Image (tube, rainbow, N blue to C red; front, side, top):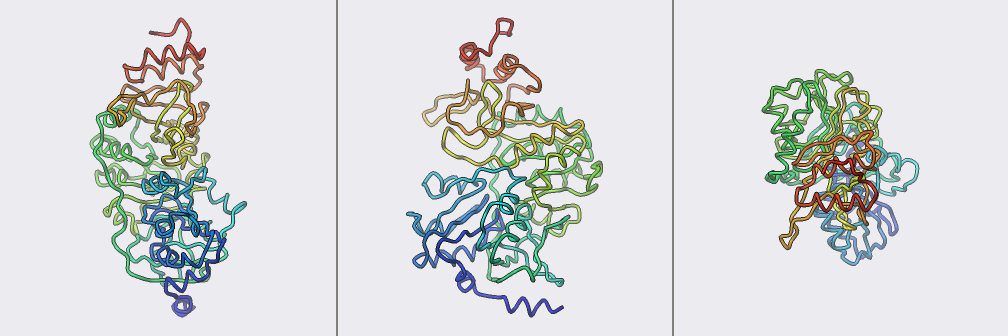
Length: 444
């Protein structure tokens, strides 16, 4: 078949392509490096022609021109499934709303409940078979594109082509319009220096990870620190099964630790739904037969996760209360990130034979006035609960690691207080007594 002629017939300039968007439409930008830079800018140029265009994104790194050109939100209303640092700042300004979700269910939300009038996303150039690769956004992209009334693809010549198990590509026959244009270097996720607390937590976690374990490492500083530390150990044949592939996995690969050779499913392949990090990471995943991209409804399925022996899940949170409830997405009512796949992997890793699920946090922080405050609180009063107490297992701070599985409320209080910052333990004991979750036999 002559795919090039079909390609040419669907080729438009960005300004021509976005003419299909009407006032009141739902528009989707998919996620991370799938963000359509040229199309977003072209849609922003139509601001005065449109009202009430509702746009959904997910971990978009910005700038988002449709948001920044319309601070009154009269023309474009942007919302995100999971905040990047950029989207968090937009939210602080009242320019972005959050959409609660579990990552494994996002595409099902679209299939069964949501409207997508126009979907726009960046993809790799078309191959000789007529396919565009969904690249770093594979985890959620295909299901969104399938639901859309109109599909517009923006060809980004810099995106890595990530091989997949299924739903990692879209065919020219499924596309309405294509745009081309020059793109700058791909966004690289900044890496900050680890804190003393981060290092202490990572070093404690290492002893729980055996050779042959399969790893899910969340977002933030902790994955990179764990990757750095594991790379210096004697562990062998580690595997990857994760919603997000970041630089920690590349570090482990370079050190000869990441082989995926002891996995029972997809042996020899690291499985992921999304990819973002450094330029070196993008180069590593490009056309790499050892990397497999797949939809998050598969990657994050707790029963798929649970079928992997020695599945180790490591994620971070903002605060925890004495009942073992975990907040990983807000500070009070200020939204920070999102549920993402934390609860998916928290559930799945515990089903795994030999599996463990860790939630990590520094025991305290220093506020803007220089006052130290505890990240372990008596009980939440307005913070968003990400993980219920019934699904909290290993909890780690710089003062140690405790396992809350099967523990009573008073045992949980004792164990959680034992890893709190020493300055706050007496006050937390008093709070536990007041809340009726402390008994006389508890250690003091």
